[in-house]
Image: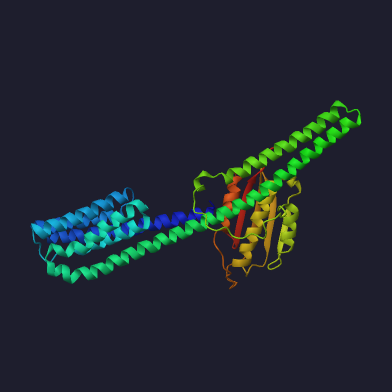
Length: 397
C-alpha cells in the first residue's frame, strides 16, 4: 500500500473512533438523566437498561454482530413483557434513545454483515423497532408504526448505500490489480522470451562450433556455458519475482470485474530506460527533465520496466492534477542496493484543470513495486508540490 493510502486509512479510523466516542458520551448523559428521572419506577428503569444495551451495540467494535443480536432480542422481549405484564407510563424518554440506537445498529448490520447473517439480523432489528408502540396499546401501535416504518426504511437505505459503495470500491481495486497483473504477465512473457532466446542462440553457437570441428579451449567453453547459465538464472529470477504477484492468494477469488481494454492484444514494447527517455522528452506541459545517475549500471528488465511504469503514472497524474506546475524533475539513482525512481513537481493544485481519474493508478503501482520487494511513497513535498518516489531493489549479480 502506498504511504498516502495508509495515512488516509489512519485518518478514517481515528475519525470513526472520535464519532463513536462523541455519540457514546451523549447517549450516556441522556440515559443517566432518564434513569435519574425514573428512580422508583421499575418499568422506566428497565427501558433505560434496554436503551443502554442498544446504544452500546451502536458504538461496539469487536463482536458487533453479537451485540446487534442481543440488542434486537432484548428490545423485542422487552416489548413483549411490557405489553402483556406491565403497562409503562407514556412518558418514557429513553425510548427515543433505544429506537435511535437500534436504527444505527440496523444500518451498520446492513452495511457490514455477511450475507448469511444480514437478513435475519435486519428482520429482528426492524421488527424490534416497529413493535415498540405495542408496549402501550394497539392504538399507539396504529398511530406510530407507520412513522417508525419510514425510519426503518431510511436506516436500511443508508446501510445498503454504504454497502454498495464498499462493493464498488472493492471491484475497482480488484480491477486495477487485475489490469496491473495483465501488464506484468505480458512483461513476463517478454522478459523470459528475451533470456530464453539468448540461451538458444548460445546453445546453437556451441553446437555449430562443435560440428565444424574447430577446437575450443577450456576458457572459451567455460565462457559460453557461463553465459548460458547466467541467462537461465536471470530468466528464472524474473519469472519468480513477477509471478509472485500474479499468484497473490488473497485475491484469487476477488470479483475482478471487467478489465480495462489495452491498446492491443498483440506484442508491445517493454518499458525500459530508452523508452523512459522518450517518455520524459515527450512530456512538454509542463516541461520535464530526466536525470540518470552515471553509475546506474544495467538494470534487470523487470526493474527497468517498473521504473518506466512509475514515471508514466506519475507524469499522468501531474498532467491531470498539477496544471499549474512550472517544471517536473524525474530522476533515477542508486541508493544502497536499490534504485530510487523519483518524480517531483512544483505544482500547487491551482491550475483549474481537473481531468477525470479512476483513483487507482497508485494502487496498481504499489502492487507492482511491492511484487519486486520495493516501497512506494506518494505525497506532498514540504517545500510545495507533489512527489512519487519508488525504491526498487536490484538483485546482486
